[in-house]
Image (cartoon, rainbow, N blue to C red; front, side, top):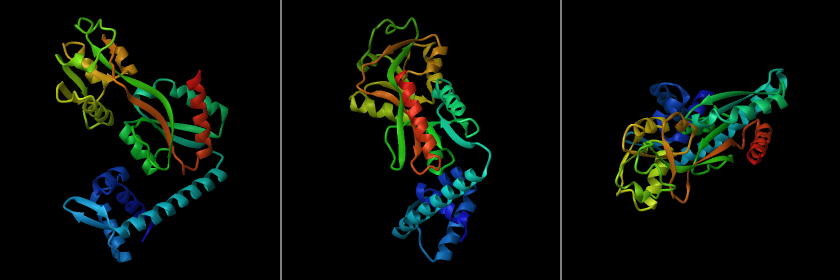
Length: 295
């Protein structure tokens, strides 16, 4: 039994998928499968049950996963603390941020924080999707995440940064362009373009339309990955776009119309794991986010 086997098992156990774990760990699936099988053989334990391509942790697997996760966290935090104490280099905080926020006020705040902690802190900024932010936090390849999430995960601390409401975008000559506000039923005569359900934001749209009792009535085309692709299609057609109000839309010749929906489409949070070794710095950064929000 070695450290790699334990890390591989911890990742497979958390995701309960060899395919997803291999992608997250950047290893081949056969190598990952063989490593976990060797661990089971060495320990003489059955850690997973197999049903076709699906795997599920056994009760023994669950028990071992808790032990391994606790042990790896202790080890990683201890190693990070020793390195930080012995090193003259600044601590690097890895930040994963969704593209719609990365170019707004975030760089200014991070730069301000770096200036206040000269030679102590540096930031490594990555523009990634919400899904990759969440995976990075879970795998500890990211220290701080900036993304839109609906639910909260245990062991993760959250700070709300901004809210993006539902809006409708239409071409300037569209019949709805001069309306001060719209309801979802106003969209019934038109083709409605929105996000693919493969994305978390697309799933939020689908849930909202279902709760409003209009999901089956709309001529909905939910196949688009972002506001850019939706806006590009809308500005040269009679279709309407049901989207979040983001900076991406400013590049297009479109009219934005508020839509009466009793919830925001996207709430963007800063988040980090409570067991992160840089907890003190991240908590201080949360305070700075709060101060900026009040300005």
